[in-house]
Length: 167
Image 1: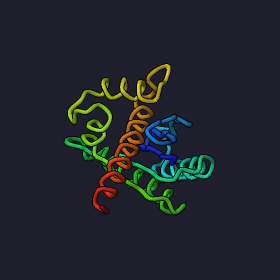
Image 2: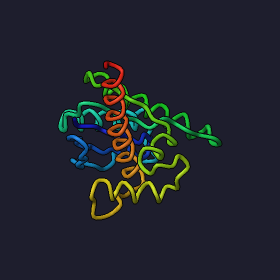
Image 3: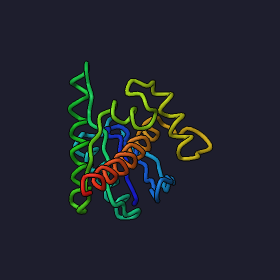
Image 4: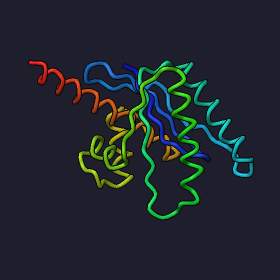
């Protein structure tokens, strides 16, 4: 199973493709889609959408996992990020891909084993779990890979639960 993890944003969209074979996770490709700050918002959204469509078409994931938004303070930045998240989900759904959503706490719990883990801990665990030489930069890329790892763990857990329930 190939999973695309996404850390949504308007300025930077982190993405990470991870293959899951049995219990083994292998990074396929990761990076970010970036938009220019002084570009009109609608052009930035189009750039994010088109970039994601190209990535999906090239790497052919089986599932997409997106981090849910969590903003406790700045509503001004929440709206553009929510719009970017919408076009990212649209790109996946138009390609017929299932989309799973995870809160930051769920991602931390799945990757580190502690829902209130520090960002640095999550990044180091992503590096270890995917056997990377270094923590991916910018942070959005490591976050996207963490979302993919979270989904991989959730898929495993759900399939085991379904096996038990069928018996």
